[in-house]
Length: 118
Image (tube, rainbow, N blue to C red; front, side, top):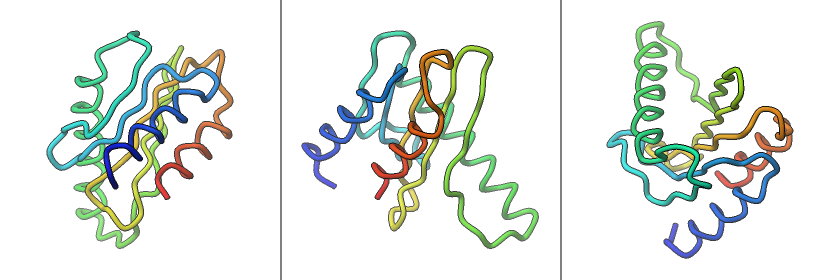
């Protein structure tokens, strides 16, 4: 993945109705490899925090002896939706998207994240 392609993908994700912020994260380090936001919240902090969510889920799967892979994680808040989509073939990478719950279509947003991850 080159940086120009990442920037284009993130730009496309920000066009999804209700998008607040998007990023490509290396969840092992918590670092954002690219990010875009409308300024509603600190996207860097969100990337670090959501990296911890992925780490916790991975640890839980290991503890339970589950062999499958995470496809995506959905977190619903009272006024926001957060989607974390793992990148196939790049197990250390994930796309993160935050959306306004009132203005978003969850199915379309989830599909957009899955397509970006491909």
